[in-house]
Image 1 (cartoon, rainbow, N blue to C red):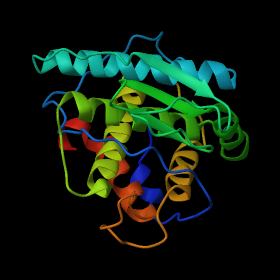
Image 2 (cartoon, rainbow, N blue to C red):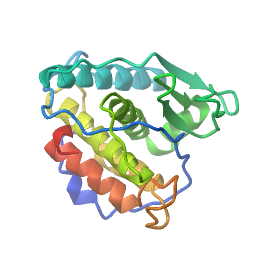
Image 3 (cartoon, rainbow, N blue to C red):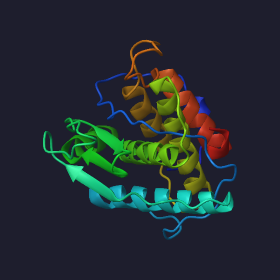
Length: 228
């Protein structure tokens, strides 16, 4: 992911079908300080789908661990990071997992994702899908630890997008993650693909329109997670 001016591509709105995530219950405001280092080798980049997934997970958690510490807090790593297939995902608080989805479960403090679905996104839209989805779900884990709440689900989803952008921006800018030409397009296309078709903030499963999701992601990328 190249350190680029993501806002230049904000007009890109390619909306296609994409899974929404399992609703979560707890959420929050980010710590006031951003971390400037990551745990992975500088300029790291996965060479396979599996290595990209693991790299996204490791660097995102390392970022939040250091960011929490900078704010005098302790980050609690997720209990599990689960790949599932179709209908065979783990239940969350008695609710079954659904296909074509990734979600954070506050009841078990774990993240799960439909591997075949995310692998297909990776093949169709590039590895930007991995580096949007995984940091987004960890954004929900951060919300849970900070006890952030909102009456509107869309506010939590957009904040998680902002957290994802802030995390990725920090990891790219400090050289923890490598960048390639076209990565900015992949990131914004993936956000557009997951956007809601209408601006109905009252829907319980609302995630925000393509433009809204892109906008908050870019804000986080350019200004850091503290603005989220």
